[in-house]
Image 1 (spheres, rainbow, N blue to C red):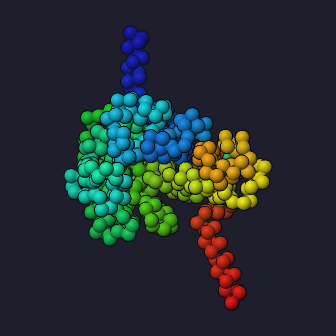
Image 2: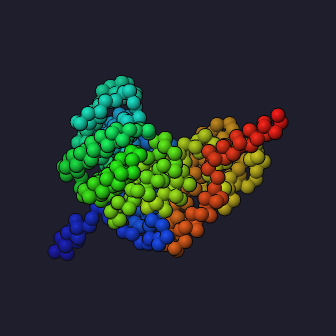
Image 3: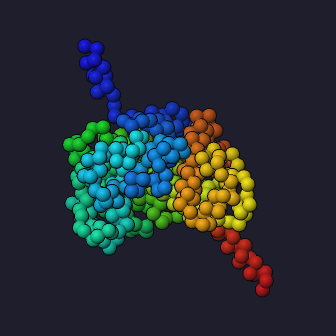
Length: 404
Ligand SMILES: [Zn+2]
């Protein structure tokens, strides 16, 4: 009897839940917890991207040590190689890659969209040719649910259409309306698969504030337990992205977690949290790390720079990552200059830890009621790389002018 009631208790446990623990009264920031079958995710959170079922150059143990609570994997790449069926045979992504924490998979739509001439869109779905061998494939809202079931992530996304930047209002509306029809088809198809997986809806609307609001209301009204904001950070100015979020967030249901798809530089995380976003993912921190770009409180530095040649201290004083606790900046500089394998691992660990610590600090500031101060102090100190490059160029031009 006892066992039966216990089993019943477990069966009644929801596979997914979101609770908000604190809200900032002076912005839209909130701190919460997303619960999944593979563990809890404190929000705001940064999700490292493991495109090929691996966050490049680091192991699951190193991800854990850096504080990762959830990772993202790409459906497009994995369905082509090694194939979702093969991954399913190995116990889905968790069993295959030996990461036992929460995983989110995208729908593959964004990669198909970026293939351009290799794809053809219709009401049925997106037909495309593999970038590996040219083989033809068709992604539909229904087939994506099957593929993501086989991949077995905790949070999965439906097929959507990401309109390019710039898009005409007509193009934007057509893409949004089809995304909405596909969302309903995905919800229906999902019913036939694993109820332990949670399907998020995707808000689109391109760069039209009214469409963004409309999409937020429509997708928000469907029975999705969480929402991803798609189609941003695709080449538009940053200010445009933030402006569109200012229109979008108030239209979203407050009780569902919000994922800003493909966005995640340090300054984006800090600003996005204030605009009501809870989850972020981006290849940027790991990609720039492999090229020598490492994050510090005062901005992105190039570890290959000569100033680190004899630096006995760590990359950043006070950083609690494995790299900074163990090695001098001079050694990491040497590894980066000689393109040694170990550099990719050490650089990636530092940037991941920076992002995950930043997410934890943002969360703590929201709970303490000091998020706006934290945001302003961070942004005053942090110089984004692009801005620094622009500044350096301005100095050069000024110098050239004064010589004339
Ligand atoms: Zn570090």
